[in-house]
Image (cartoon, rainbow, N blue to C red; front, side, top):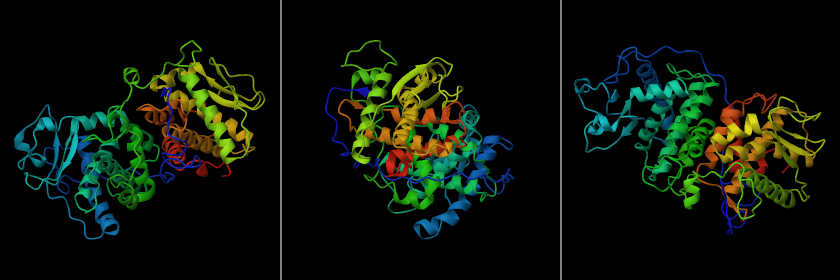
Length: 474
């Protein structure tokens, strides 16, 4: 994020009035999945180059078989016409142990093994051999599974299959980032089908969704990539948004929400050399009071005060009294309404937002400056709710509302509604990482049973839809 001495867009000019966010999103709740399914046999689902008993190949084979079933059912009702099975081969490759004899038809579209390393791809090029197929690096898939859970190879297969869907209907998006995030959306719709217990071979439990979302952090574009760049896949926020929209809304939502020029993407290039040099991060604290500069904490407190003052004036016809913001070192403040074990919270007795600088602010800053801003925005939203006299007896409802409001705050910064403040590339990715890494901890949200997946979905709802979905009476 950046403190800038220039005029931003007029309030609401980017994406509507302050009440709104940036576009439209759909929220939903995860449901428990079925148990462990049986593997499909290699004879039933051929993958050239696969190794019998290899966990990645077994997982990919199961996913590919289930994907064919899913799209046999889903394609006609979503796009019309009948489903056409992939014409090309499916290939598993270990770039460090490659034997061309294992691939009698060659790799997809005749590409070389070096093209597959640390990758998975679908290719449809009628003038090239073995078109309309999928090839993946199984050693890379194993790394993904080890880091982000056993479902990751299935998710990657579902994403690549999404490109096969695009090759089969007329109005598929052409811009790279639209096509890639739509493929993420198709993967999300398949994932919901799996979690609902409909798949014959692939299984997934709801808690595994958090790991699956974190996997998008590894496969996002480098921070600062232009959304219009050829080959752009999207930021962490963009890719997670695509996936969750498919999960919540199904394949029809994926068909309708990714047209070229019709979608808001948060991925953006750096426009300032200093911001680039700092990877988009302000210092945590700079130790001075120079109004021409700001550190992370000054930026956060200043923008939250401006945001909520404007919101109270425009939406609630009331004045806002900014709470004090204090950091504490490890042991909680003396507040009757604030659990001593909490790392953040609002104390109505002294109208102060408290955040643990040792156990929360410091590790959050390792993610990035907007992770810190998100941490402070949550109890600040509690303070705003208290001034609105909203009920606080249902901890789950309060948690959902505050996360949604933090997303709304982020949308207004993204829209550049404050004259001297704007987000940097990667800031919204940092917010998502914070929620996944810290949001399920009891010290952050005691009494909440929301998963990281649900926290992120709620945050996105506030970002895209604004205060109207945040349970604040508007």
